[in-house]
Image 1 (cartoon, rainbow, N blue to C red):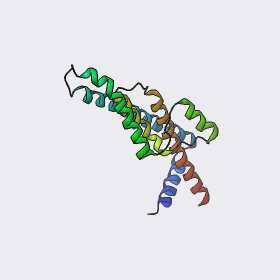
Image 2 (cartoon, rainbow, N blue to C red):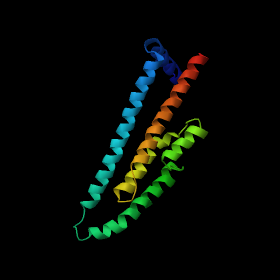
Image 3 (cartoon, one colour):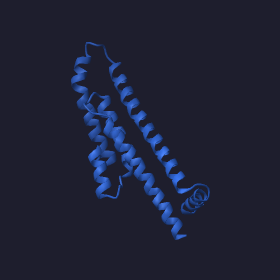
Image 4 (cartoon, rainbow, N blue to C red):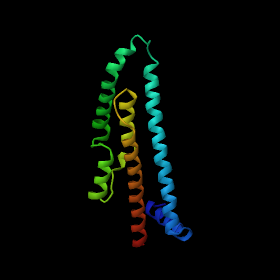
Length: 160
């Protein structure tokens, strides 16, 4: 079955069974749950990377690790961004506000996962980062991309 035809069928089913307000409530809950899952994934991955790195050597050598490992984590993050993402993934409230004001709330799709991966490397290796901004940016990217897909669905419905 054609993708656009499937999207149209799903959209018609939604319009037939849900009011617009109910659908917005449903989407709000779904996006919140998905963003919360992203937060759990980030926190858990930072914890497991840190536990793995701390559990490999005796405590005598760990002092050297605390000096070297943050640099290794930053290096891995830079390599990840340059090789796989190939885009600016700076995150935070200012980036979200800029997207809202200048880009019609459009945030690139890779931001749904790239902030989690990069923060996991940096934080897990002992770098000085906060996890709040990547979680916030991930949630905003999830909402933005779901909204973009729904706009596509609405445009397809109107053209049909």
